[in-house]
Amino acid sequence: MLGAIRARPNFVKPVLVRLYHKPARNTEFKKLTASDIDFFKRVLPAETILATPAVGGTSDPVELEGFNADWLNKYRGDSQLVLRPKTTTEVSQILKYCNEQKIAVVPQGGNTGLVGGSVPVHDEVVLSLRNMNKVRGFDDISGIVTCDAGCVLEELDNYVADKGYTMPLDLGAKGSCQIGGNVATNAGGIRFLRYGTLHGSVLGLEVVLPDGTVLDNLNTLRKDNTGYDLKQLFIGSEGSLGVITGVSITTPQRPSAVNVAVLGVPSYKAVQDAFRLARRRCGEVLSAFEFWDSSCMGAVLHHQQLKSPLSAEFPFYVLVETSGSNKDHDDEKLGALLEELMENGTVEDGALAQDEQQIRRMWMMREGIPESLGKTGATYKYDISIPIPVLYDIVGDIANKLETASLFKSAGASDPVKIVCGYGHIGDGNLHLNVVADKFQDRVTEVFEPYVYEWVSSHRGSISAEHGVGLMKRDYLGYSKPKEMIDYMRRIKSMFDPNGILNPYKVL
Ligand code: FAD
Ligand code: MLT
Ligand code: ZN
Image (cartoon, rainbow, N blue to C red; front, side, top):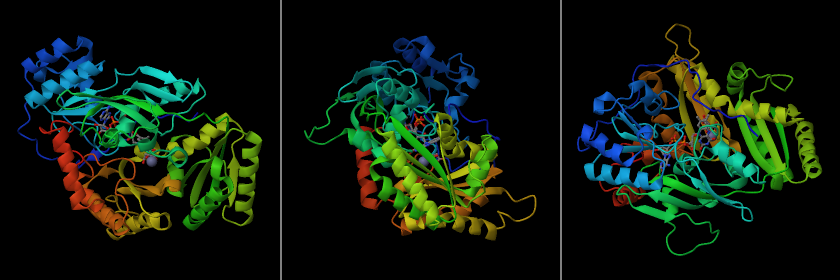
């Protein structure tokens, strides 16, 4: 239904003064040799291996570029070997060998992650799941789909749509991200408000551990209380504990009636009032409640060639969606909500989509924001959750700090910051604070790191609501988790991956 971001956008390529803090290469990891490549050639079909001459292969290094650079063009590794297995057995053989030889590996799905977790830091082998993309089965009574981890989210959604179901998660990167990557990051997205977390909808996982052991927990049971629920550990583990090769997930009935409206709102307080009323009036059919500010709107209208459906510009915009099975009932509820919001002045203007195309355009206004900001310049992204009333304060705060440091809105050629903006899943208490500059550079980063994390911590919030930790936030985990918990995380990591070969330098 929604517009999909299929590939990396055509960025204004940021000039990088200093990329980010790159941890030193762990010298205990083996450097690849021709004999390693010979082993992989024995266990994998030739067409699934990309190896450069630096490690005894023949692939042009350009072919590995897309595996070494992340979606933001911020994080960049130097892998000389990409393996794209087709079966779980092949994944197992690869990991077993890498573990024995102490060769570091980074699992990669659609490479749409935003925290530098999906690309190598140094010369890790990239284990791409893209060739594992088959649906393994579908239960038409329960709506449970079982599939390979490399299935692209949008393709899975199309598959279950034909049978009257919908995937319980949706995000702007749906055209590229894979279900295995979604599970590995515990992705949130725009249906979270309605269907909740993947910890609830994922019913089973098949995972290959670093020593090659296959944990087959790919069941399709809604209820199963036989001991510890190990699969939960892998949901959100960001490729640091095992490689997810199979997923079974419950899919809800596809709603037959969908309504979308975009509203112009005068203040952040009014955004909250609108959300409170939307929950009260449309509770059981409310399926999304997203917001963004005027700076985001400026970028998205410009870069997506969209026209605002509203009569004027507003400080904030809200997208409200209802999904249900009875159109008249939903129309009536949403209509009454919009009328009440307009009458009491919470909302100053609103437009209700009249057809599928208008629904798509309205969603593009929200989902096109990350891509539009990326086209504007180097984008610093913070993904935080704290109680809704104070959530947006950080945007003004950061803008003021940048102004004080003469890095924003000050005249002169050295002014690098173009946009400070906020958008996100307000219904989930999740804000995306974004700062867009001409280039990534330390003096800008220093204004908000660790300030943003300290600020979030002082509100007992999360420094990563949905994007994960990756490389970007691994040194800041302590702002959201106490030391004792981090110690236990380390123990779990070393139990599953004693040699630390899986996605090293990330998360912890
Ligand atoms: P990748 O980026 O390839 O990998 C992400 C992490 O998972 C890495 O650490 C990687 O090592 C690991 N991994 C990947 N596959 C596997 C596997 N099979 N087994 C083990 N580990 C694996 N995120 C949200 O939560 N909500 C959003 O609304 C949202 N919107 C986005 C919109 C855009 C335009 C973009 C570019 C990104 C968005 N994201 C969002 C972030 C990203 O899309 C999600 O994190 C997504 O789940 C990543 O999936 P992927 O297949 O691209 O994984
Ligand atoms: C979104 O909600 O659009 C995504 O999480 C991506 C982003 O934060 O830019
Ligand atoms: Zn998001």
